[in-house]
Length: 210
Image 1 (cartoon, rainbow, N blue to C red):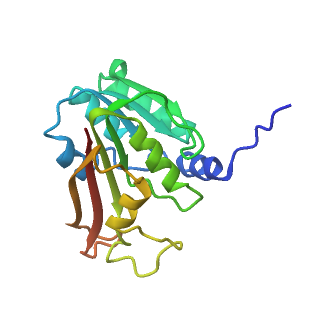
Image 2: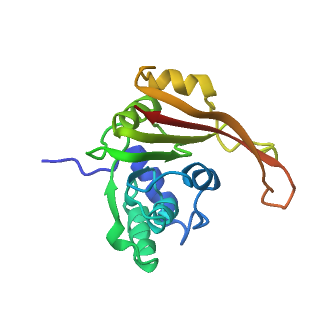
Image 3: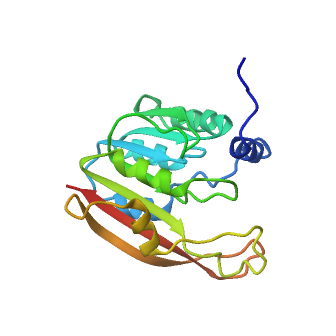
């Protein structure tokens, strides 16, 4: 007899997606577009793909994309957006609780955009799985919030934001196998829900496997 009770993380994200017709903007993440623009399209893995905006953009740019997320609702929406954009044949979708299960295979690009969660997530395990999934000559692209946005005076939950060095240490990559091509904190304008101007600080890591 199997236990079909959802794990706490799955329950949280399913509730989040089912509670709204759309959770995210539908536009690809700005820093993904910036960092990937010069790469030759190949195979890509989008970790925590949500409703699929990044994966659809990559597919439109010529990539063959696998999107992975914990929420079945999000994945259904992502598949629908891909079909609407005419790239259903260039995208595939897999449900995984990252840190516990992970897509098989290797990819020319592995992207994890804002893979930060208010519920349990084994970030170190996910990062190391992500690095192992990068094909020789491929790229690992990570983007994470470096802090709460400037206008967020009362954070909705406790969070610890990793530093640039902490994430590299968690990856534990052999220096003779990897080149750090980008490692920086990017500040971008961002208005709060009430229109108050402010900014967001995000960390970016782009690494290439030998």
